[in-house]
Amino acid sequence: MEKRWWKESVVYQIYPRSFKDSNGDGIGDLNGITEKLDYLKELGIDVIWLSPVYQSPNDDNGYDISDYQAIMSEFGTMEDFDRMLGKAHDLGIRIVMDLVVNHTSDEHPWFVESRKSADNPYRDYYIWRPARDGKEPNNWGSCFSGPAWQYDEATNMYYLHLFSVKQPDLNWDNPKVRDEVFSMMNWWLDKGVDGFRMDVISLISKKPDLPDGKPGINGYASFNEPANGPHVHEYLQEMRRRVLEGRDTITVGECSGVTLEEAKKYARSDEKELNMVFQFEHMDVDADGSNKWSDKKMDLRDMKQVLTKWQKGLEEIAWNSLFWENHDQPRSVSRFGNDGEYREMSAKMLATCLHMMQGTPYVYQGQELGMTNVPFGDISDFRDLDSINAYHELTTQGVFSEEEMLRFLRYKSRDNARTPFQWNDQENAGFTSGTPWIMVNPNYREINAQEQMAREDSVFHYYQKLIRLRKENAIIVYGTYDLLLPDDPELYVYTRTLEEEKLLVICNFYGNTREYTLPEDWQPDAMECLIGNYKEVKTGRTMTIRPYEAVVFRRKN
Ligand code: NOJ
Image (cartoon, rainbow, N blue to C red; front, side, top):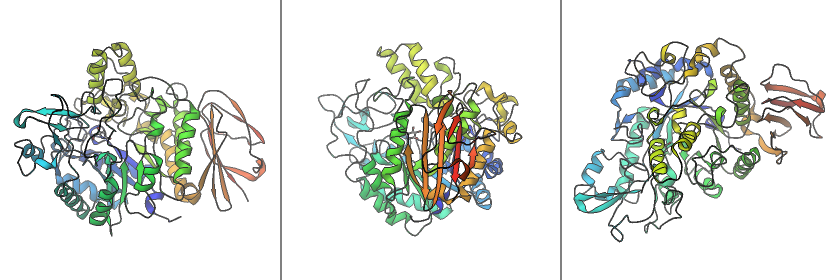
């Protein structure tokens, strides 16, 4: 297998609005990030993925961009950006920008022009259609509730927005749109950034006839309907030729609706498109069919089946990205672990289970502390338009009661991941001296970076060790993965193999104590513990696996 630095790296995602506020306006900013780069260096990560920092009216917290070559005023200035980039590079940390080009803001000058008249030179930058039978052109729904079409009086036509009304979809079939996007990407790379995370890049190519899809619980077809469209690979190959070729970058495509077969095309190791993709199948194991609003707990067997399918399916062909969390998902310790008695144990267990798989691991800010979901009160505590719109739509339609919907939001809302980073036990968790834009999780007095950095057995230090082990053991990066015990409902056990070397990873996803018998080719006296979340590990042919225990053994030859 080809060795690559981005396979050997660990990426840390920063959601700038909630990371660190340097000027007391209650909103995180670039100078706040610069201040905390030493913290990230100490954690040991190699790359930062910055959620969008561009000029934006913030309908969707920066995922609605009105100027791709300017910094959001609340986050600082281009000089602040350059300083941050310079310091990151001095520390050996690379910076990946969030490339949001499936859509722009409706306040982007291109759209302001586009909506003016049907013959405006920017008209075809976006997707306009006449009404069908006096209504929307098809039955697609927006990701954020309601239809994916907005009627515009000026020209008596509808425009497509797979996300909010303020996020009109760009028309990638127009070569001028591709020229604009590619030249903007080149501008950022010339400035020195190290790559891109590409927002919903799987959605950029729509079938020309925009066919209806199967309706979901709110009556609309999924926003994912256009996933993996007819020209997506062609456009990404064009991007490779016109932007990325000859540059040493890292690229990861956010590919909602991606299948294994499609992922092999996006992230094939011949490097004609992207280095890797985010797939979401393992984020759906606790959904209620196609509906994410539920508080159903996953069945570990489903999780193992999905992750194993991706581990084996991409082996030798393409590269995986590994994640439990990001700014669109609730906190993993509350979702797949235990955020009560076993919070630290289960946070470490989840980290072990993920970081020992093949692929590039992504750590979302606060995950390295085992930050948890948030005890939001009523709907007024939420800031995320996805959560707020879904609450109103589904309670108004009578699909769920208000109590039910609040329960689901507390479990699944994106805002669970968006509360301020917990730096210390001071006011507002040390995030801001002002009023934070979203509530602080009240558990910051117990869960914060300062406390964990001072304590040897903290989640922070466990992540630090996992990241270091990756640098010291090629098998963690390049070894092949094989699942054991596929039908065990509580233990996730797998091996990694690199030539003569072998690792055995044992993770208990539940609070029960379990017996586990070693595979035939493992001898208790010929193996050593590489890392584990309990202090002492007793090896034997049959071992006792404690609640939420994670342990990794290396076989001695
Ligand atoms: C995916 C992003 O991760 C999410 O936060 C955003 O709302 C949508 N794409 C729209 O850009």
